[in-house]
Amino acid sequence: MPLVAHSNLPAFDRLRAEGQEVLSLERARHQDIRELHIGLLNMMPDAALEATERQFLRLVGSCNRVAQFHVHPFAVDAHARSPEAQRYIRTYYEDYRRLRQDGLDALIITGANPVSDDIADEPFWTPMVEILQWARENVCSTVCSCLATHADLKCRYGIERVRLPGKRWGVYSHRLVDFAHPLVSNINTRFDGPHSHVYDVTAEQLSDSGCRVLAASEEAGLYLGVSDDGFRVVYFQGHPEYDINSLLKEYKREIARFVARERQDYPPTPEHYFPERAQPVLESYEQRLRDAEARSEPPPDFPEAELARLVDNTWTDTGKAMFNNWLGLVYQLTDRRRGVPFMAGVDARDPLGLGVGQQRRR
View 1 (cartoon, rainbow, N blue to C red):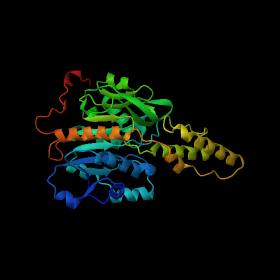
View 2: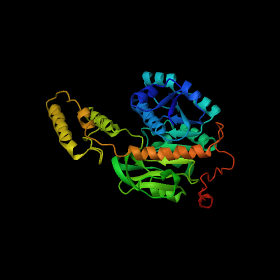
View 3: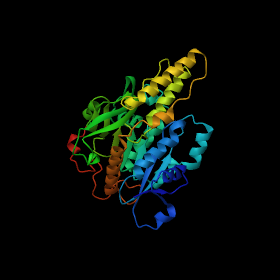
View 4: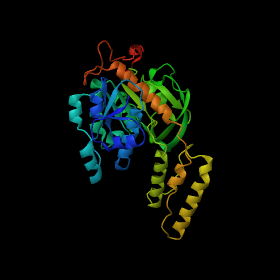
């Protein structure tokens, strides 16, 4: 069932224009269908704030479950935001204190741009940890994306992320590791998935802490795992929410940093993202940029539109299926009352009945 436009968040109109079904609140009220209330803690910087919001809304809205999805975006006061971003958040985002009071059935926490080697020194660390700790007791299941995954693993298990020699970004091949877990039901045994991170936690670190690794890549490492109880926290180190042009825009930003002398080297392309037919366009642009620099001329326009026509999306169907499975399980387990994480008879220590109690390591 579709998303419900329970507020005037601009993303709802954008998604409608893309062909996604979004119910008006009036129409939703006349349907005798259960609601699921999903929090979205958006940690991304201003440039990616609205795009990230839409990406996760698309994943939730694509789920084919007998429920109406009310997504509640919110943010924390830990970022240096532009006046425009502050105004957007004040206008369209919700108050975390009110969401705590009303309750949530599920929670999504996005990644964020890291600024410190020690994640505990990040400006958002304290409010994020508070929210993670609250969610453990009051929310059926939480999806953590990228840096949020690193934060919860440190907070919950003492797992420390490590800095990679270089940025890991691109589209990589992954394989299922745990075929029996319901989160990966009906998922291809091999699938593509984007990564973009400079810090890493390994599949071995998760396994050694009693967590379950569900999917990983020989080249890119951990993609998907779950907490030691099997479901309360879902860990993505990859980015199933990415649009087809997310890595393209990220590459464009890295080139802009090179032009502005914020990085010394010309950025390498994201791995396995641009097809062979895009190479002449990429090489031509780099040469024209260097020639312009040598002549002290303005840089040429980045060929974003031309490159966008050449890249392929090979990961979204898998991401939708994973979120479909996740929200389907939330639907089966959570109580109808907001603020009560599980219906009667569900063991919060092993909500899926996977027999994980004896394996748990604290």
